[in-house]
Every structure is written in structure tokens, then in C-alpha cells.
Image (cartoon, rainbow over all chains, first blue to last red; front, side, top):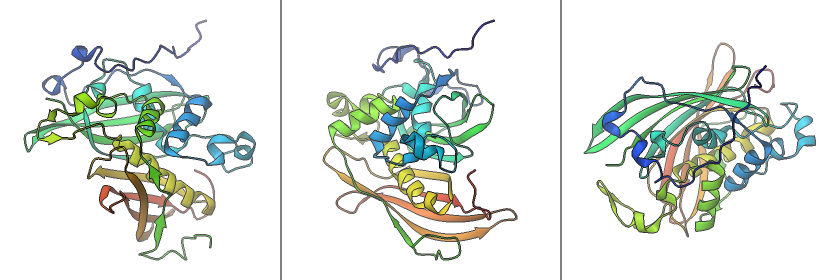
Length: 162
Length: 149
């Protein structure tokens, strides 16, 4: 039997590396799924994310308090999809192209992600257009847990580097 | 006073804590989000032009605003058994090291649906000059029977 383990490859922090492998605006096909990777969400990753945005909520950080709380255990803040977007996509994903500018996003939240969840992503470009000489791509994304329950869904626009 | 669906009024405000932006806070956000776009790391790169935009130096992740708004909303909603359900944001102005930003919200309207109750909130993040850097709308659910969703 093969255990289904999300491989934890070292995350490449140099976004210039592999930049030539990523699709430019002309090559992005709206409707075409993006390649994604399952990701094991850990307490440590949640704690680091909380530190970066100043979150101190015990539901995210204090196991005994979280157990007594409304979710019966630790959860991640809703905004954890900010991390999941990069954690669940490979190095050649076009969202990583240097100079990609986020022009706004909207997210809907169903159930919280929890430490220990194996998160999967279904994602694609949904649309692309040109406005005021800028190249836009609309992306849509749905994150699931290991029970195929929707955690959150969101869409956004990026301005592509030229 | 604990916030309830019934005692909320249009125009009520929510104020989040202020956040000091530094090169270190931006770097920490890179590590926490795995977003290492050179927009947030590389001053030399940021001296260049981006189509019609020029930044002059590294900028904070737009999604850092999103994280601060989320924190404000969940800290406000959770003690009342309410659930943060949606957030939409737009970035209005770049945020740079040395800026201090603060999220706030204003209750826009309430809506009762067949199975639940909703509060719509206009949100904004402003810098130390009270300039908007991000704007958006949020939706918080106040379940009829207080329960976590």
C-alpha cells in the first residue's frame, strides 16, 4: 500500500529561478487548470503566518484554549489561503512570475483549515484582458481539506509583468 | 458591550490595531506566505518601471493588508459567535517600510435571509497620513443559533 504523503520539497525562494518556465500573459489559457500540489498544513506554518500579521487568537495558537472553543481544536485563521496559494502550487506556476502585481482579491470562507490538514487546490485562470495598456489575468481558486470539504474559495486579478 | 446582530446599527465602527511596516515585517511576511516576489525583496529591481507604474523601492505585500483586515474582523466577530464569511479587497496605494497602517470597518447594512443573518461591512486600511491604502467589503454571519460553522 502506498501512503499518500505530500512531499515536502524545499521551497524555492528565488522567484527568478525557473522564471523562463512560467507562462506569460499570451500563453495563459483561461479555463485551463493550473498544476497544484497537496500541502500538509502544520501548526508551525500557522504560527509563523500568525506572527507575520500579528494574530494572537488562542484558537490558532493555544491548543488547550482551542479545544474548549467552538471548533473543538486548533484552527488556522481564514486568511491562511495567502500561504496556501504558494504552498499548493509548483515553482513554474505563473503566479510566481517576478513583477506579478496583485490588483485585488475576494474570498469566501466555508470551514476553517486545521493543523494536520492535507490541503489541495483546484485553480485556473478564468479570464484575461487588457485595460489601460496593462495585461490582466483573473484567477479562481478553491481549497479543500483531506475530506474533500471546501475550506474557502476565492478569485482575484493580477497585472502581469511585461 | 458584546456585539449582537440586534444591537448593531449602520454606521457603527470597528477599529483594528495599528501595524508598523518595516523591511523586517515584509521579510517575515515573505517567509510566512512563501510569496518571495522581488517586489517585496529587491530594491534594485523596484527602482525600475512596471509598465506605467514606478515604486522606487520595495513594497509591502497587498495581502498583508488582507491579513490585517481579517484579524480585525475575526477578533470582532468571534466573541459574539459570529463567523467571518467573505472579504473582498482592492489595493489603492502601495505601502512601504516606515509606514504605519491601520484597518477599520463601518457597518453598512444588515440582511436577514431564510436561514441566517448577515452584516455587511465596508473596510479600509489607512496609512499614517490617513490615506487609504486598501478598501473593500466584508460579510459576517450571525447564525440564529450561535454555532461555529
